[in-house]
Image (cartoon, rainbow, N blue to C red):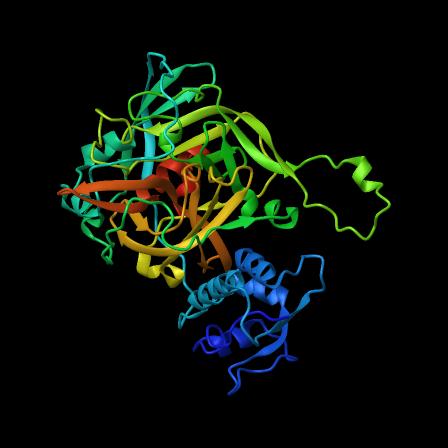
Length: 457
């Protein structure tokens, strides 16, 4: 099978590394002709690179999952530009993950404690406006870097939260913070300056991939992506819990329409048509399996006060996250929470996430991209996205030293597309809210109900 132009793939310096990682002994090395060939060991590919790259490889080679484990992989002459981009993305991401002298490690640190101290009942909300699938702010990266360092009392106010119950009851919880070093807020991460762009959400070539086939959609990690009835996306982070963006349920002033009767949708196959199963024309390939959403009602919604305008943080998106508690447990594997490392600590400085972009209805869309600018609370990146993807869990795959295995962890929430007007010149960013130690402690407490299970990030 012809896969790629040898001058775009096989001539890469990393090509021998790719050969050694995923080719069996039957495969040849990269020779002077600039070609390498052999059989790809798919379990080995999955082990070193993860299911996301296995999906890209299968798509690039057009080999369905039912094929034998050893897949034909031959670099020869040029082919369609579509496969060029897919395979180049595959190689670059795999090289990024394997190009470290050591494995990229999840940081080991003791988490602070965020505990409820006082709960008060609030007037019921009005549920007036529609959900906002895009977020705008007048405060970009430079603005955020110039803001004063918050005090203990500021953080306490930001991390206090509201809880909306399915019966319309609204409560406000005041929290206390323990074991947190305020000096850590002054340690700014290494920054790569973002670039000014025109107003758009797809940066050049559309680098998104629609995930197809139940073998991927119903298996981890893609199965952790869910859809909200307000139009956003979310990520399973517990047996009954979904992490999403606060603006998907609250516009900063009030709860949006649909948030009281909020539902979460899980992709599952439609029932097969028995007429299709009994078809006598065996020569025709079966049509692609159609999927549908199975919905579960939300019991409680937690929103930090830092998102609610007029109460705390008015400058931007630092607290654009919310946690939903479902009325019943789902039966899928969820993704663990993690504290966001700095961009330079991420494998290849890249993040990835999957969501339900509005321009591809009914499809789960996966993407990965490089982190550009960052602040203590936000990651600015150039992942292609459309409305509907906001609320997706941004994650990374790194080595867990304690469990001695590769682990994916949610390190942020995709907040959306941000346009900032700086002296009349528009600048554009895709923004993710980072899970900091304090946010980890708060979200983990919402999930676990006790702080003892939340001391290790």
